[in-house]
Length: 575
Image 1: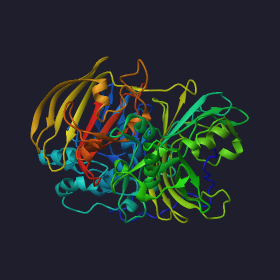
Image 2: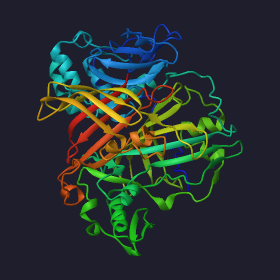
Image 3: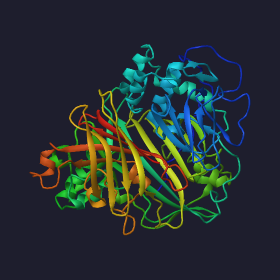
Image 4: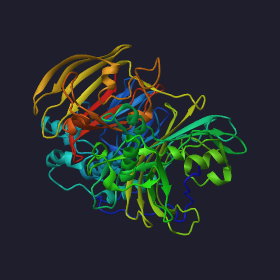
């Protein structure tokens, strides 16, 4: 296995001009506070945002961020941010930290950029401050309804909010990125105290996981969402659809050891469907690298083509499998010199230099570089990358948008999400335990109401109480129970998959996945492959861990139609 190169051939864009954000320019530092926050204060920066509501738990501190974006917390608190107060749009939840940007608040590239577009458009925006309007700070019932309808993945869901704000168009993604870059590029976003275990020579085990979320062939093409688990398929083939890029690393002094079983290579698109088709026949599938850098699938030694793909593995234009390539799994440990890995990004750079801290692991950059082995300019790509380290959860997070500038896949745009965290041993894992009470809020496009419910998880399963959407926008009473096995047969696919004693638990990999599943009640007939697709659903799960036990984050689920549009959403949080 060889790490993908990220040696920079063009420096970080450090001086983008501020354009299109409206308003004038204040004097002062980029997004900074005239009065630095105390140890129990943090700042919400895009630049400093005034008027975001926050609740810090368990301390109970709450209120609106002030002109410098300050919010208050106690050590080890988790902080939840809202637009429009506690009944408005729940933005996200983070561990106690000195600086929060839209990226930390949402844990997702598209959600972060869309939040920035909304904040910069609705507020009185300058290069150093954003002041939200009174109509959002003290919202009317119609404003609350509009805020509740917003899904930050999709700006179309914010049409009602735009109307409430007066109808002005949202600023563009590029304009929002310029403003974010100017606000974050020179900002210290955490403590400089060294993280003792996150350094070379500690002998610690570090796990990295990477999830490819979506891609499109060019800026004007249809976005395809990557499917990471397929419950419609037979059990054996379902297991082939599970798994994401995972690297297990040992932090030795003399070298970085990449451990046996690590795998950082995926199959997507028609190649993945061809691969599954071959396995579904009971045949032997092999991935072959072509001379031009592309790949093909051979089935029993014969090259497959798209016409060979069985109907069971055709996901439509809006979805694509993202499978681990089993042939790329390391069958023995491999050593990389620290000099070689220093250019692989901020995580590896600070590990090699023994400089990892909350601040060095937290940053924002727009970078163009050559990813070719020969560094000959043949594989140029641009990354918009935000990295952050959460001191409470001990998790490092990367959110990324990548654009391929040339080569075989020129114009391709992809979104990914990555995590890194320490583990006790290569075979050990950390989990989110669902036991406890979760609050849930469900929305449907075009509905002015939300459905609120509680999920009480115990050792046997879950009890659901409250409201759910019935036909259209009608709310029905919800009072049901389900075992973990019942939930695993639906889109809560992770339950019961992590071994004895872990029935109620999920990994970060599992909680950041798209699942295809069959929505047929027990006892109802199935003519095959979920009634030939008639009862198929796609659900996209996203979770950013918060709190020492990782269970204080917000779990988001989007149910997607076959064209990728959203049919419903639900947000769940422990409390």
